[in-house]
Length: 185
Image (cartoon, rainbow, N blue to C red; front, side, top):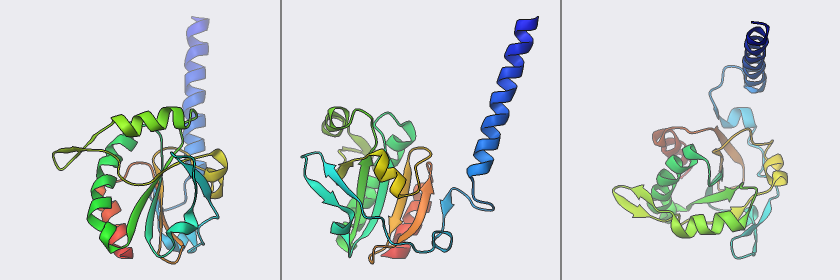
């Protein structure tokens, strides 16, 4: 009986701690999509990462484009759902000066990400398509430059002039993402 009480008390404490941590890290009155007014239109951080070929890529290389910077991981199920939408949006909006930039945050880096990119296909309007947008290998330092990442997917919409417009924490609807992107095009 004593062991059961200890287990119940421990579980209750963990639930309370999780609830408190979640509440403490949320912005008051905001959904997990944070509008520009709360981000203050901050300039994008100076970010330079390696692509899958080992080349340095700077976020500044995309100035003049609307960028959907997507922090994701190969093991993240919500990320897989979102990837289909991002492939579709890349195809639909690329001609209007838009690009998705994926930042893979897998601890194992290229050894896991490169085979995933080469092998995986995603259902986009009934067709199995590969990820066809730039993929960079993320680091904790890169995530910290954006205020830290609490979970995946986490994305930042960046305007043509290099300002962070919106942060998307967690999986949002494709319609919410499209509306935010179209407002910048």
